[in-house]
Image 1 (cartoon, rainbow over the protein chains, first blue to last red):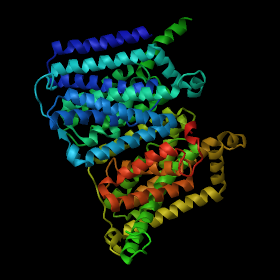
Image 2: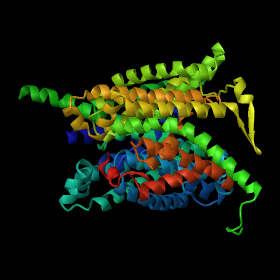
Image 3: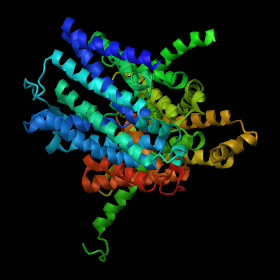
Image 4: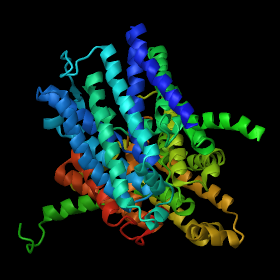
Length: 323
Length: 304
């Protein structure tokens, strides 16, 4: 089964790598970049929430830290956004460690609530601390051509986003196969039993949340440079935190390919509806979110392993029939 | 200022204003929070869609006023019945299947419900900010230099009446006792022949009716839009965690504390930063006393 999934991933990332050589349509490339970026960011969420079971509803906090760090460093202080990306990672590691520490004291809904509160604090700070962040006006990021300034063509952005996606997919595969991954699964499935077996559950939870935070910040930095604008009410929003979760859950929580499958489905339908209906009536694009809200309810109940689980079931059924 | 010096008249007046503002606000927060904490106490589910039911209540008041010229306070009894029914429907369709599921399944079931309801409102009524201004919101009552409008005072009074009615129901009726018994020990309640499915259905419907009614009450005070529930539900989380999730009396005290922090915070650091205060308070409570200020220690580590 894992072999099929790896082949699926190879096909997916291979197609993404070849597509820009054939198709030069800006709309198509934009969709592809966003699919890869949201997929990678959902994979980052998956590290803490899927593999380690520390379900966060506040990952927008780390995304926003990354986005603001890159935007401030490049737009405000005229330095390379790559330096901003590193700053964002450093800040997110600090914030992730604090949140990870909280996860040692709080389980289930308590932890999810504390992550929401944390992202809301950052939202308020970013939208009110006018001298640093320009407040609710947001920060436009000027386009300066070059790799060092991250002023890239659409085609180049596809490869940056693809590199990010491959890296995060690699991290997930590592978590599925390594000793660390098995220990995290132990923490997720039964923390008390894991603790009794001598697994340092507290340290592992902090590690997983911190790693997830750092990966999310990198995605946030790159997103800010690609989109060219940072709006506090978007980058720190609960909607964004839910988006990471939604992609992953629909694709398959705790699976390496799941976040990317979810992102393909959700991002492409969203961009399609946006392009088709944006002029018709404000709010009409909300239709896809109604569908996804309903799908989310159905998936967590009937298909806890998401699309990946569906594929597994489809393959498992004939085998069982033979036996 | 010398702390031993007796308070001057100006300070006493300022203090009185802060106290009155706190109580008025706290009463409304309490009605929003009791539904949340009741649902958690009995069903062990944090309802992440709680704010969306509040938002629907606000829209109900908005449309009743705009289309039918009906005063929100006349709509209130109807809203209780409507939201009770909506609670029964959402329980049967959505919640019933996940009562015995893991926390993560429950979290994302209510998150999914929240996303769907929010966007139903967005598609049906657009993202515009809407207002209603019934006659009583123009009637100004003065206390010293602070002005309150009549809507605020009536909303507070009705919220208190509804909250007390809920407490009386839980305390003195048979059904209320059965609900409290289920909250205390689900297994023992089942052994005593209590139909827990019926208890959960009622609990959910009552919680939704309470927050829907709260939405109707706050509609003349705040603007109405699809994500209007968010600011209130975030407050309600702070309230119920302060009071101890599932603790009804704790929710009342928590409401007063959060309202106090908001009122005093606006007075001292300005309205722009007041929300930071109660979120920091929230995080501090989660770190130091996660079972709530008045709760039993250890409840949070059970994830219960």
